[in-house]
Length: 82
Image 1 (cartoon, one colour):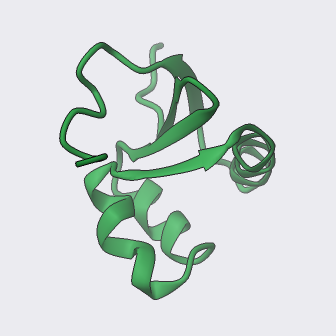
Image 2 (cartoon, rainbow, N blue to C red):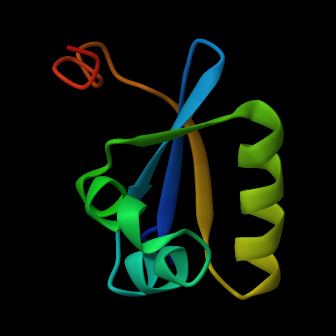
């Protein structure tokens, strides 16, 4: 059975973009990030460094979430660094 990941961490250079994919993903992220970052998190417009991505993955999986690590698709970040 293929389950949809709760959170996708998409690698782009030295950063990982955080993309919540299920209803559980944003709720978990909101418990772990400051309120002023929530809008960016829910839009998939937040990114973190490799060490933070590794820690997020471990914490989320320890909480029972499914996390997928992938490469960002071309054009994925277009518009977020303007």
